[in-house]
Every structure is written in C-alpha cells, then in structure tokens.
Image 1 (cartoon, helix red, strand yellow):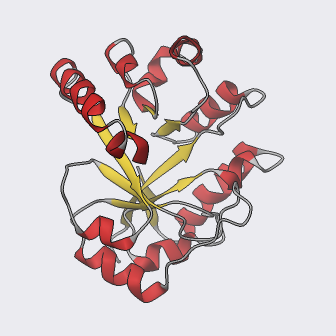
Image 2 (cartoon, rainbow, N blue to C red; image 1 turned 180 degrees about the horizontal axis):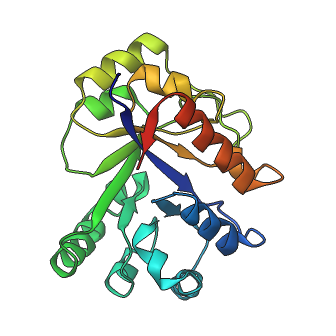
Length: 217
C-alpha cells in the first residue's frame, strides 16, 4: 500500500466583508481546516482587531494576517504574511516589526507570495511556506491568467527549498494537477467565496483529496 502524500491546505479570506464569514470559516475549521489567511487590505488596525475578536478564541491559532502585523502580539494567531509591498516598499519598517514580533512570539509562522518561478529558486529569507500564483486562471480576478507552463513549474518546484503552495484558480477539479506538479499544498479563494455555498465547495476539495490519497494538514 502506497504512503499517503501530505499537503497543506489554506483558505484565503475574501477582501471585502462577506455575509456570515466568521460562521462559515469556523464550520470549515470544524471540518478540518487548519489555516485561514485573513486578507483585508482596506481594514484599519481597529477594524481588523474587531474582526479577529469575533472568532472563537480556540481558533485564533489557525489565523494568519496579511496586514497590521503588530496585532500578532495581542492575539495568539498562527502567523503573519508579508505581501510584495511589505518586502519592497516598506522593507525597513517591516524588518523592524518582524524583529519585534519574533522576539515576542518566536514560534510565529511567516509566509509570503511570489509570481515568478525564479523567485522560488533564489532563497534569500526563511518562510514557513510561500504561495506561487496564479497557477491556473484566477477565479476571483477576471482575466488574471497563469503565465507558467507545466515544465517550468515542475523544474522550479524540484529546485526550490521553499515549501511552495499553489494559488490562483485552484478547485477540486484541478487538485490532481497540483499534486502532479509537485506543490507542497494549495490555497483556496475564489472557488469558495464566489460559490453559492462556500462550505459545500470546501467539502468537495476535502473529498477529492481523500480520493487522491492526499492527507491534508
């Protein structure tokens, strides 16, 4: 009997307010989701603080925030995500905040995202995992198509030391391709939040992974 492949599954929040978002996400947590990326670029610090406070405290350690990273010292969240803007335009300020957060929370996870293959083959910083996108045509961004070809993806993923997660257009229908490319996991966004029933779509992904003998974490 072949050994199951383990892959990380991440759900990324919708950018704007979504009806019953907290309840839907907490149902996904109950169904096995371990990581939820909170991407609310227009939120102020106070608004994000209020948003985080609405989660059951037992689920805070499954949240990764994309903005207002200093809140990681107030909430026992799982991690912080550095956007391209953080890495480039606000580099020094981000570095200072990172040092402080890591001092206060040495166990915290740090993630980022890239859009070109060579970025994942030039490892210059340590991240727990990184996203590469868009792997397929984006569902949440109309006209945002993948520029990768299969061979370059496979070569890049073979060379990298990063744990790379596929992002962009990932659905239950193409999880098998994600597996074949050699990704360490995947992120879900548009396939959930642009559906009539996000939890139902989430469970379709779970079922497909079981069918493919993928163990999710």
